[in-house]
Length: 247
Ligand code: FPP
Image (tube, rainbow, N blue to C red; front, side):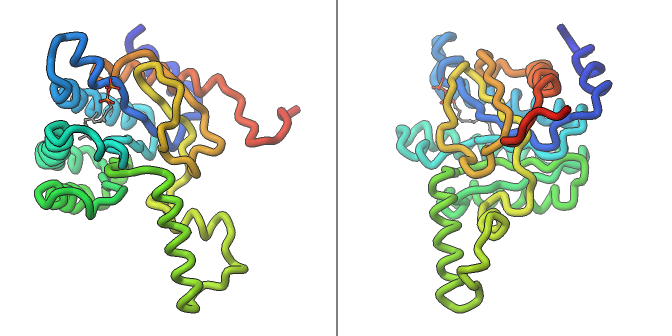
């Protein structure tokens, strides 16, 4: 069912503004082919391209990709090195193309934990793409939602302690402002590949009312048509945000 899917999406004005993706299944993709795990991660880079191009074609404004979790630091050193190198190569190779396409890339998470070469590549991709107005791309790197929430609480406490914030004024908006995703609308749609029904410590605050879509595709096999199928499915959903149905 190729890209008449896109035509069907565009006939409906309800396109998700913000799509988040848990890119899972790189290891299984590689194992099925008798390849080392890092081969799956490298192949996953093509799927990242597909997701970005698909998002731009549909009018999605924000795409948030879970590229490396805080838990991923517990993987073997060789795999961590491969993922760091991949981030660096991705940022170096793609930044001009992203800038031309109007994609503004931001890397969110504990960026200070990345090795110096990866940190420099992050700085460069952010500089090269600043101001892009077609799509905001968030690459979540060394990211864990619980750590993000703890960090936000700590930052608000510090402001209260030094007298710049009245604890009485801490509300949802103030809390949101202390998250990595500060200022962005919550995801409307979360896609997870490889058939797992888990959030895996991803955006626990921001996903409160997000529609979930699980696909059996392994991440390296993910194409823009998989994204289109997820968006079409989203367009059939009724979102109530805890209220009763309209009418
Ligand atoms: C999960 O697969 C995927 C990751 C830990 C890394 C995600 C990275 C990419 C898709 C590479 C491209 C990204 C950018 C933006 C540079 P897994 O290893 O957990 O797979 P498994 O569950 O099958 O073992």
